[in-house]
Image (cartoon, rainbow, N blue to C red; front, side):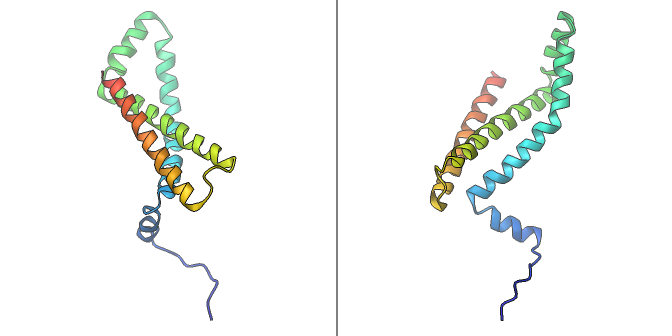
Length: 130
């Protein structure tokens, strides 16, 4: 007789199963990008507030905060998170209209969205570096 009781799986088993599916990868990264964006909002608002105080403060933010490795890195992480979150969120909205809801269609759509997000994040990196 088969038991219908839930089985507790280890974290390594859950990750092993989920990392094989592009849909699961896209979903997990979508949640992570949302948390990252949420946590960086106060930092970005502080940078904005400081830059709007005066022209000298703007130059200070531009040179010292955004010109540095840590500040520029935080802004890039926020930008990458926004790009990824936007593209995968758009994928979810399109799927809400019934497009790409089949198993293979969902996988293909997830791969396409991951590739598009990677492409635009790479473009954002090049834009910030150059």
